[in-house]
Length: 495
Ligand SMILES: [Zn+2]
Image (cartoon, rainbow, N blue to C red; front, top):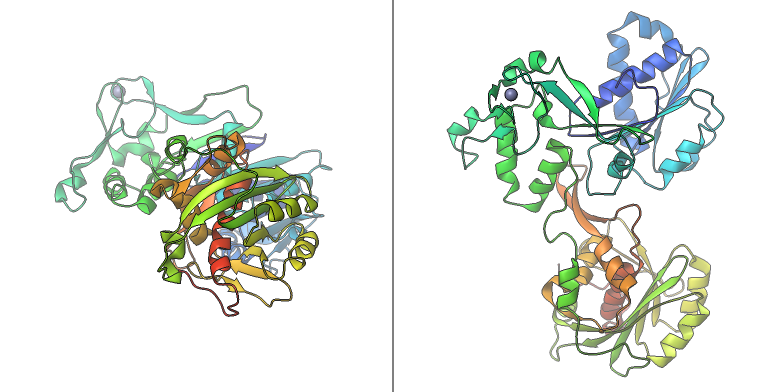
């Protein structure tokens, strides 16, 4: 990896030395080639400052040569070394990634980054003669983040000569590991060990330095443009096979640990069962009705704004003695219409034909047009932001004047997409194929929050669209709003 001079992708388990490799390439570029480097981390705070103190400073402390090389290191985001510069930036701010001419860019923890800003940083290199990109991350789901790049790479795996049978082989899960207990509390688990997948000889963890030293990268797709490198913790010098076994056995008990095991231990993409709506789930929800042109029940509409305006119109069956907080869990949804239209003007006809009682529209990216639309319906239309700091399914209603609300994206998607698992939504027989695809695009994954606790978020593969899934979500939010009309305070649904 140190020798690689073309664009490269590292899809990896956690703590396998990839950042260390990236750092070596950074210092080499600055020292030997006098090239400037852009090092991109997910966020400028705390990531960039953490990187400066926990990675950059220690490197200088342990090397006189590097210390002499850098003339100015006080600025967290900009270290100067003669004519060369090291810029350390977060991925969130587009302006931070602009106007920096560099010869090499490192993207560290790609899956935690704002994905749309990555190609923007690529453009920064266009004027350079010698240029290289190095993207690295633990993966999440197939086609998302690092895996989207890895799929477009040579997909190299690390092979070595088995010390017992001398065949070229690799460590893979589960074939290469013999787990010696069924419960992670069982002391026998410490005997867990690695074996050669060919001759089944034991590959001692303590001898990794020796038997991996014969190794070489073998590309699965040598013709691809980027060089790809995948390594799992089966190769780790520090994580023992027994520790991996504990992680594996724990992973069967909950979704967050299962995701963590495949992503962070094996460096593989993984979708937990039930984390996304499947085609079977959708088929099970298709009813006897066809799409309608009008309707008379309690109707809500959700509108997602993109190149088109994707709309979902739902007729609700709300239980009579409804305790309001649970209404989204108790009400049954019947989708009567789903369509995409080109302009806000087209929404008026839908509002009229279906006598929509409550409508929620994506507040971005057409804020002004959405506002003008909402203004015409006296509180029946709200513009929705997905926001941070909103707990559970509370709807933060802002002043009537700007017609906006803020909700938590994950909590509401849990309810609106959860209908497909609970069977509490009925689709028309002729529901558009695009709707079926969009609803299946979102996968619920787990990330760690600032305190290290797992939190659920919904992501999609880079090439998938999810507009109808959000139209679905807005339609769901519109139900609670519609039943709470006239109340000015924040509206709270059951946690
Ligand atoms: Zn062997």
